[in-house]
Image 1 (spheres, rainbow, N blue to C red):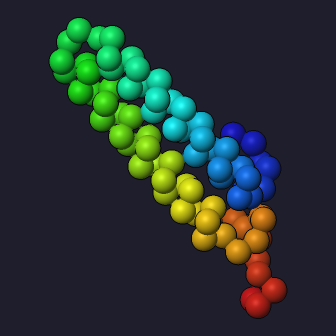
Image 2 (cartoon, rainbow, N blue to C red):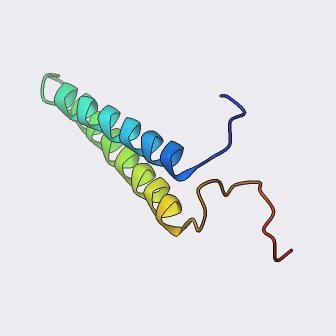
Length: 75
């Protein structure tokens, strides 16, 4: 990973990337023949969606553009 600051934009890009991988996992799940593989891929997609939702909440809750590791003026 890079050392660039975490911003709302970066968080939203990360969430979009996770959702893209989740979509790909679901499409792949539709093509596999073994039920256990299908369930595993579907579970993986759900976990990715949950992670993306958490990241989006972090972005929405942020009060500034860059917020992780930056001390606030109130400190």
